[in-house]
Image: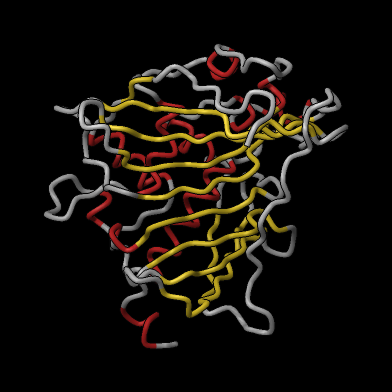
Length: 310
């Protein structure tokens, strides 16, 4: 595919993490004391929760708080307008897992390699920037995970760019009740804890940016809902085994406010690939309110009670 900005590669960025970072991430997305392999560094099965790699492009290789807006403005995509990072929200994410991250990067070198997939002008509503981001081990060139993601720059369209392709949809199976439904209660402090993983967007900490964007105040990271849902689905279908999830994706449909209760509905499709991973579709809504994650699809090896109930 060609178009403005397509194929532009950002400079590779080094990234690193400690066991402490891995523990914090798992705790911040809802891992429980029944999952000590995510929460206790001396557990014989201590492992990184697979979606942790999503935070690394924010964290990079620092342990310190960073200026989110300055970091977003650092590099401009050639051939397209300069967009205001103070008015950007998540569009959607798809993450594929190729190799589990080690519980610390110590002794290895990793890079974040990102390139532009497309920049799409949606008119008055805004512009979508779609990227591919790989977590790569330097030297071997091995890709541990790949994320296809998009950011939506609110009100920054009408610059004459391409509209972009239609989005592929993954609706729940027609006429079938969810195989699993579960709730997740957020608090006033949920985003304040999650941001310590490295995503320091002020939109999720202070009311002023959210008021300017029409949200009425601070909202919870879209990737918090994404990650906590991935945790809940792996816990219920895959026995909390990180080896039992291969892919996870969703569209960010509407914001979540601190204190909202999230309700996830998930449907098994019965479609199992050659490696034993079943396609599961899901959606997440605020209790009694709007859908917050749509177009949800994951590939999980179903084990235990969830398997026997089919």
